Length: 315
Image (cartoon, rainbow, N blue to C red; front, side, top):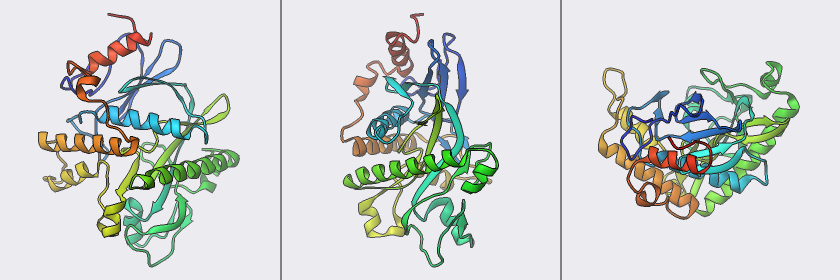
């Protein structure tokens, strides 16, 4: 079921459940009653490529954080969660996904900063002023939606409607909810000394009702900065997410190609950083290795929990 070391989960397969989709990080399977089982693996994607080295606890961190935020924001919008059935797995309602990513930004950074440096001033229909500096905050949160295609592309709200991605009414609803979610996330993280720089939200329709799906405010979907670090020097604020791995890959690029695997030291440090951001956000550490997986076999633990949840039968 997995080719990863016992203490990591690189992929999940079982003849008992139909594999619906294998994404860069998540494996989706059909649960017996028609729901969707999302297994969050320890795979790490960088520069549009999945690395050969899984990161211990990464999947459990992402799954646990998403569940934390879904619970914190369900008063704003319903979400797809039915039950957390394992540290790495979530049973969710089957919704019709809307093929649009609602990207909310509070600071000029990342790909937007690179475009700004090259002279671009309008992003997904939002025009920003001249004279801004790297990592400068915007006067208010901005929305820069993208399509979910083979290569995501910037698109204006008007074109989302005219191209048939969403209706105007649905877009307005998504925009309102995305900004409200970002406000709640920003406020809670600010209390913990963390800046929510930007993030993406994905929505779906369930019986005609808009719901939140995928993940929310995780290190893979969001950019975080330490508020203390930012206060010292905004332009050198270090990201509290997988940017550490990206920078290592850039530094070790050879003949125009990034490494396909990480060293044990880099993998261990990446794992430590994921565990650290989990503890800082949730306020308590991810359960210790011995509690999560007493014998170190993540797949065996996952299968045992799926059997106990009635989603699989003992083999």
